[in-house]
Amino acid sequence: MLFDFHTHTTLSDGVLLPMELIRRAIVNSYRALGISDHVSASTMARVIKEVSADCELARKHWGFVALVGVELTHVPPDSIPQLAAEAKALGAQYVVVHGESPVEPVSPGTNLAACQCSDVDLLAHPGLITIEAAEAAAENEIFLELTARQGHCLGNGLVAKVAQQAGAAMLVNTDAHEPGDLLTQDLAVTVAAGAGLNEQQMEQVLIENPRKLLARAGIKL
Ligand SMILES: [Zn+2]
Ligand SMILES: [Zn+2]
View 1 (cartoon, rainbow, N blue to C red):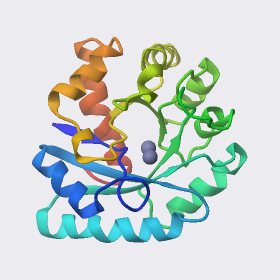
View 2 (spheres, rainbow, N blue to C red):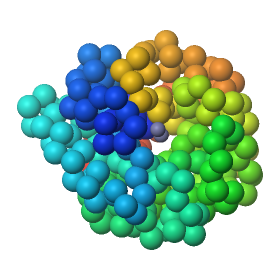
View 3 (spheres, rainbow, N blue to C red):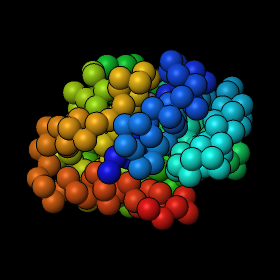
View 4 (cartoon, helix red, strand yellow):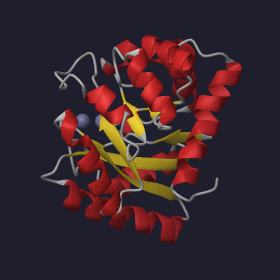
């Protein structure tokens, strides 16, 4: 049973149309897919509208759960509350913030600002996350990401440790930009086990936490 809430399409820097990404996810035995293209103030309204059209087609014709998300990317930390609220008002079913990955010059303070914002659902690749940010994530029920993405994944071990100390919930996502990046069962388990999770924690992170995020969007799986 595979879930993935961090993926990209031609609407930002991915290579597939939302429709083809959804099709590929179905073929990979995904149970649900979230599409979270990079957005900022400039592109948010257009991207949400366009992703929604393909997600709706997949729901209607294939009965597949494709969720409309956004990834607020390289935005000033202080602007996160306003942009996250705006994304939800425009129809985003969940909001991802592009966290302070060890391999990109993300504005310092992004992790904390995201974790303090109750309109944010997922902090992607948080890198060298602090306990203060993880505690805020726990309080606001924001998921912290263990990522399958090369480079971003350098922080996974620390993210898992600090998230558990703070009582914050985690999700495994791919940050897929190409079809070959999508999850297989083996890859999902490798990312979780590689971050040091035991069997029980893996069940929580790979199955139960995705269900919680879906429930928040009104979807029961
Ligand atoms: Zn990207
Ligand atoms: Zn991303």
